[in-house]
Length: 300
Image (cartoon, rainbow, N blue to C red; front, side, top):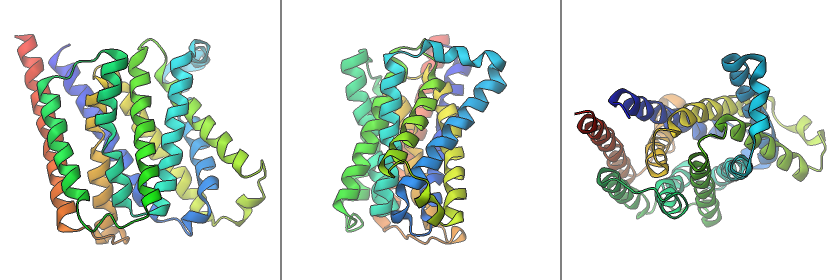
């Protein structure tokens, strides 16, 4: 793999994490968010699928439908795992603080590394292992304090969301020939169908949801879909653990956005949360430089 290719993969996956980091802020703007979880999930899942279909149409033309003829077990499993991640994130963040939910998502690279090792036989490079250890230290610094006073159930569901995304990451590495974007479309459809089922296949409850919530769910769908497009573009070049590690920028950015007064949420993190976020950022930056050096050595 060339240096430019590796750096390209690093950049697009890094940007994916930044896109996703605005998800916590979007949810925080909801009116009575805990009362409209499934309506929000329905709109968001639907918008994710539509955006991915439009992306496929603009990149492949009318022949984009051929991608769906190649759907296999990896696409179906990946779609289910990603739908679990979608659902778990919204449930978790409406039950507890954004910081607690995002902290749980920081477990993704460790879950992906373990599953990737046993399922795909992916071997961790030393630089990746070091970055994971440093990031884990950052997570520990963040959560070993009184800021994790949110609902325990919210934290558990956040961990389930992290597990779902880690497993999705492994599935898109499992069979590289499987069209990755169809997996995201399936995830959005699964999420929307599940939400509609819980709502009793009735649109009546949608009429009571504040209009702003509908717009926010569509915006969130755009952020998630854009991030997943970038993430999938980098997936064929990076191992599962490294993909999940770079996505940790969602954790750091998410905590930052709900904290900055300019956005009006003002969920002020404790000093240890800030320190932990800096440590995680350092781990990701270190990985980026180490990966680039690795490619230079290969090229030479």
